Length: 493
Image (cartoon, rainbow, N blue to C red):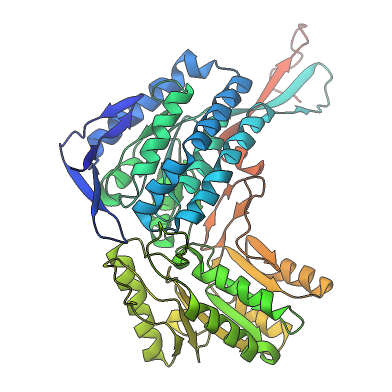
């Protein structure tokens, strides 16, 4: 018998107002894992009210910044202590490799430790004035209740990227996880309560995007929305937030270029291409799905990538030998399949992959796919597929590949493979992407800020800069002169 998960509101489990639940299935086996509460506006109202009450409660409001850091450090410890359980739960939920999730969970506590250290580094500054009797200083304050909407591809990591800085800054939070991956976020909220966060500081409302998600975005009690997901949904969220003059942090789609120059170590570059598009079955916003290879190394790179793609072990993500698990749900598999068919209709050639492999499992698997005979005008090259599909194209000059790489609505990430130091810096400067990797791909740290350019989003996640995303700046002026005011109609300075 599967478990029914309720919402986590005000420090405990809370049944859905409408009494409805929805099922979550294992994408590798199609077995039902659990049921989660189908949230509604009424549930979001309760969660936001609990978060607001907690924000105003002296137990949280008056807690020192240093002690907020202590709580975050304790939460990081608990995540580490429960790493194996969390890794298995996430693998069963979205099909990512267990060995990859073990790696993520080994480093995830560091995110909490990093923001624990930043909690008491949030500070203002003194501003010089022309009048020595006037003291002007700034201070950073928490915003209030943050609404966080997180995706299904890396729910724990991407939730932590919002949760940790929001709490370090003194906010409270209501999280709406993806309906495909609710369980680990609920478990994280339970661990936050165990760590000692006051009731109502961390709340989770599960449900569908069009119901619970929309209610959270539109709620008048929310001071900020932080969202990771599709560009189309991000645009709608930005419009709603703008109508109420609240801030947003939006990490959206990508169609990232991975560029291999003639002087690159081609063997390493080929592995970088494989990591960039086939890791996590291509279900990452930073996937290097557009591969550009200099014409002099194009054939060698293509051969190496195709050979490795064809040898990737597809199967049960719980097995250590597996290198590629399933896509997260049926609609995603159908989307990837339809894009490959579209590419073929546009003139692309399927060099390897291009279908659903026969591996003896009923899940949503898709073979690693390499497309050739493609160009930057094709939809399969311009639109985000979010699956294990690489489009590989030749180029001749640095200027040409810069134009091709930047000819996209997206600007999330880019990769460059070269031994030329000057070229590495030139490319990093001119590529229109928030993250540029040189001779590596998919490197990440809580200390390094991430920002999307163009349609890939607004705002910053990770790094010291992300703390400003969850605070507001106040300027305070204090007149230390107790004498009479000389002229009430003259502006003071």
